[in-house]
Length: 250
Image (cartoon, rainbow, N blue to C red; front, side, top):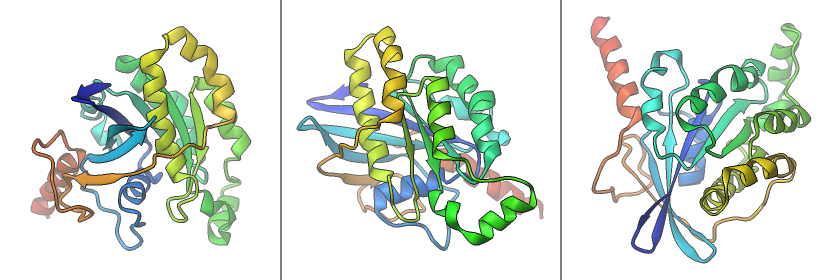
């Protein structure tokens, strides 16, 4: 966790399978608007001014591409991460299975011991008739909250949450507790953090930051007119480049 003057910087990286709702989650949190018509593939890291324990915190959120095409590039965003948020969709069981078989392994290669928050997304679709019908056609059902809690304990996540970017339910709690996890990490030993992870995952804190100012380097979002002086590594740039190359080959 870096420091600039009296303001602490907390870096949070969000990972998970493609199309589980990572970008929608981040856009909703930082702009308070759900991208109903179009979810941009260009999404740069956001800087949010939050408060924790009455002190200013610069919360830096990193979106990552979940597709296999980016497996070699994605870990470039992992150094100096304070907290990882691993997302899965509650209506896509494969994304839950990949937490253990892909995402946890990938994170532990370079960032073993970094706090992890497990998040089940798209909870609004648990009651969506069309989605339920599609799941029934393949003999599947939505992932239950209990299954998520069990996995969080199994992988040693410090917190577990479910949320819906569409309704906004549970979104703020995720990032409030990401900041809390970063501060707890800096004041506790790895062994103490490991011992407390199981009890925390089933009863997450509901504390919320008291204020937020958002800026972004993204060219696809207009949530703020101000831009940071230095542009950080952007997954959006990688995606945009890939998209442009496909256009030129047509």
